[in-house]
Length: 107
Image (cartoon, rainbow, N blue to C red; front, side):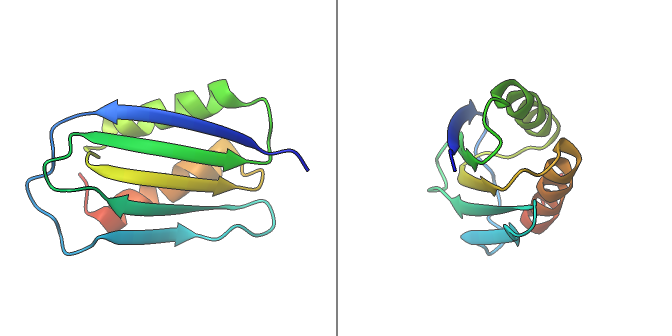
């Protein structure tokens, strides 16, 4: 099975509060779903990196649209995000990203 790897990078204002987490995990890669893993970067970091590994090859523009929308509406900065996908629909991706934001306490 072929896999596609995509990487996106966003800059912003570093978070003021750290909410007591350094690592988070949302979802599971099973039966067409996806998981998201997050590691917080040092407090002064003003960048977020998103690395996607997906079995749905050729959908980079769709991923870009979904991730751009998430990053525009959530104040996520200073973390590394890994998304492992096994063919989830954009609606499931948005659901998992919303769950992630809630876990991160990002408004």
